[in-house]
Image 1: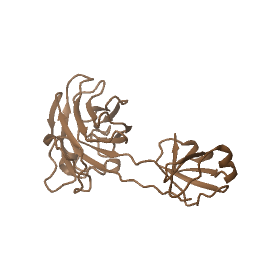
Image 2 (image 1 turned 135 degrees about the horizontal axis):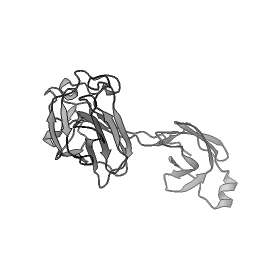
Image 3 (image 1 turned 90 degrees about the vertical axis):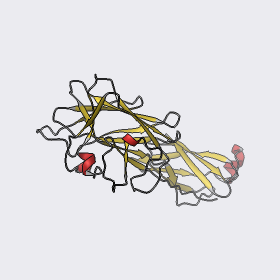
Image 4 (image 1 turned 45 degrees about the horizontal axis):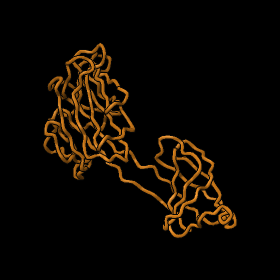
Length: 268
């Protein structure tokens, strides 16, 4: 019997709402251009994602902070952090950016940075997610320099996620400067043990949003599948411990023996 080790690739794309990043800052995608192949945050890798922008609720502005820090440290372009777009329309009216080319089998997380006059609050939503509010100022009369808000674990619809921003209840004109999208890592199950009849094995489950549950499903290179009860512990990464059936148990249960490479799955 074999053992399985999984892995994943993860893409992050950074979006500049106002389309004013410097020309040599290649890791930024400017919404005004409605780019059809967004560049990942390494500045060179094409993500295959697209963007279609519609700000039918406001315009552009030149407020913001000179240097972003802390949680917003990824907003490292002066012209991104110090300028943005705004929404002045009624609460519930949003500017939108459609992000296309996404994988329906994956989930995505979004992080937003807003910097503007103190007392203004921007409301964000992705598709029909719960909304999150981002204060534009720091509460001491200065533009926000370090705080971000996030919406996580969003599943695309027909390969598209719709990002929305508007003003929150009680706010005047609300600003948005930048956001980034990250493809969530794929849950993986690995083991360094040899899966032999009648022996105990330990699995490590990583990138799970919640604890997986028993049983583990084992599938060999011929497509034969068995399920094995496991005991789950930990809080991420999770550990699952089980015992492979003996040859006699497999025959009695009428299940196939496993041969070759084996993949292991845990569900939540």
